[in-house]
Amino acid sequence: MLSERQKAILKMIIEDYTKPVGSKSICDILGCSSATVRHEMNDLEELGLLEKTHISSGRIPSSKGYRYYVDHLMQPHDLSEEALEKLEQIFKSNKPALTDSISKSLELISELTNCTIISLGNTSHENFIAKVEAIPVSDTSVAAIVVTDKGHVENRTVVFDEKIDILEIKRTVDLINKYIVGTPLEEVGDKLEFEVKPIIKESIDYQKKMFDAFYEFMSDVSENQSVHMAGRNNILKSFDDVDKIKRILDKFEDREFIKNIKEKENGINIYIGGESEFDPDVSIVKSKYRTNGEEGTIAIIGPKRMQYDRVASLLKYIVDNLEE
Image 1 (cartoon, one colour):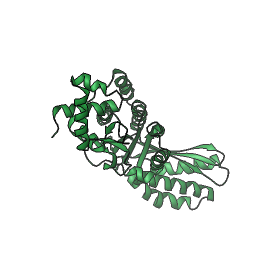
Image 2 (spheres, one colour):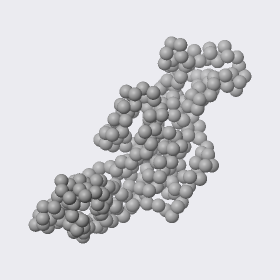
Image 3 (cartoon, one colour):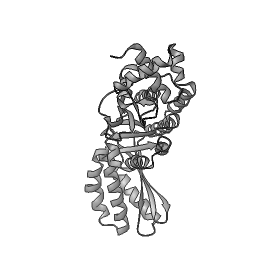
Image 4 (cartoon, helix red, strand yellow):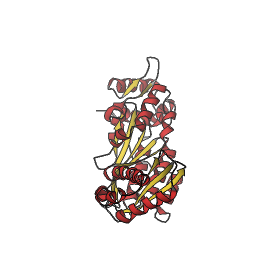
């Protein structure tokens, strides 16, 4: 059991360490001597709540210390007027599509926290295909786009071995749209396989290639999560160790690994260091959301010294507004 003074010292060390502020302020705020503070910090270190990275270094919070802080000492953080104004603009500007709201929210949180933000969206049976598009981006590639009636958007670049024929692309896309618009996402695969494929089979090879590309793409969309990421390179600002940075960046590139970030519990949940499978040097603050037939997860990933109170408050604001 920590004393009230030990709780105050731990809270100040954690919140100052994230900013940071000199330890002298602890003495000034508590009105005690530096010897008293050092004694209390020794006790906190023995309890495993503080640690030294080197023998000659000062003490920093341990994972256990952060966990105690999050569970017992952290209080809701009042968002700044500037942050609130920017967030309100996102959600009140003509009720933007869900993907736009999430994308803009991620970019803003990334900017405000210097963390990496990931959203995983589970497209459910309540999502229906609104349209399919294919936009040429070069002589040999197109951007394939799928849009649902709930504003969910997925895109993928499709590359061909030969120069594309814009007219044939349009014919293929028109045919696919004819059969699948209005179809629930989970039924798209069967529609393509049993209704569109037999027709395409009688067409020229080019249309078959286009169909195969869309079939693979839309199968992924219907049975998997969409992944949006913002601030991926913010991790460069958080660590000096090149190997550590590379290890974390590699995980951001591993789509299957990222999908496992999905949150199963309700509320705002905080995983510190080794409490998640991501990396022992990072923490993840995440929450489920459900809105407009879509269920997903938003996760904020950053160093263990992140401002947990501010990050948790920002995430709660985003989730609350998405669910309204």
